[in-house]
Image 1 (cartoon, rainbow, N blue to C red):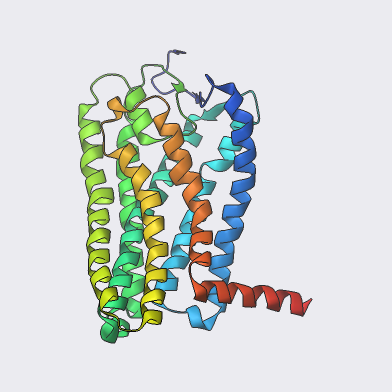
Image 2: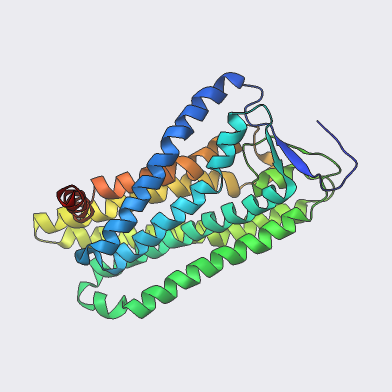
Amino acid sequence: MTVINESHPQQFILLGFADQPWLELPLFIVLLITYPMAMMGNIAIILVTRLDPRLHSPMYFFLTNLSFLDMCYTTSIVPQMLFNLGSSEKTISYMGCAVQLYIFHFMGATECLLLALMSFDRYVAICRPLHYTLIMNQRLCILLVCIVWLCGITYAVSEATVTLQLPLCGVNQLDHLLCEIPVLIKTACGEKEANELALSVICIFILAIPLCLVLASYTCIGHAILKIKSSEGRKKAFGTCSSHLIVVFLFYGPGITMYLQPPSSITRDQPKFMALFYGVVTPTLNPFIYTLRNKDVKGALVNLVRSIFSSK
């Protein structure tokens, strides 16, 4: 453990998989492949939902926000991971760490709330179809999305700022691939029980309550789908909802595992694999899940590709 005289070091050494160096090259290659895939997939979804008039509905408005959010989310960590994995200097400046801390948690919290909002949209569409356009009007959708983004940035600013105030007693090594709140709390010295408690309480509102709302929505949706007489209608409703449900479990599962336990009880490698999962794997898979399991998006994407080639 490297110790220096300053309370807040000028830079952090991100140990990553220093004890397992054989993992670094495969991880570098995986990130080098998945990052462009995530960017292209999410850009494609944004383009097709904006260019195809048939996709100008609340569901795809929220999906556009999710794709933009995933692009920012993965970009906040992957370039720095690639740089550290590809070089001998595995460092990040204190300012860079602080910026990453704010952006990463801003995007993560916003995604938690946005996924809950998307499940509410599906609930209204399937359980209240006659009132859907009246309830989910454009003004309400924009207002709800603005509230979600505002809540995300409020959480990030408050929690990250408090975490950065913790004394590190000169320690400048983080046993992680990036700067993340639970790892910084675990690394800090002195009294930090209040920070652990605050993180757990806030994450109940950011993670646990939204997940309960998602599960409640899909319980009602399940009952409503079973009542649909048309097999084609049931299949379409199930296909649309199953895509979202897969994304929900891919994102919430690792997030709850990481954030709803005291940072002091986190095992050594747990933060690394969890961060790779909800910060890299999920943003990469989301576009493919929504495209492959949604006929509307798939059709719009095919039409976009055809129009590009026909124009050439």
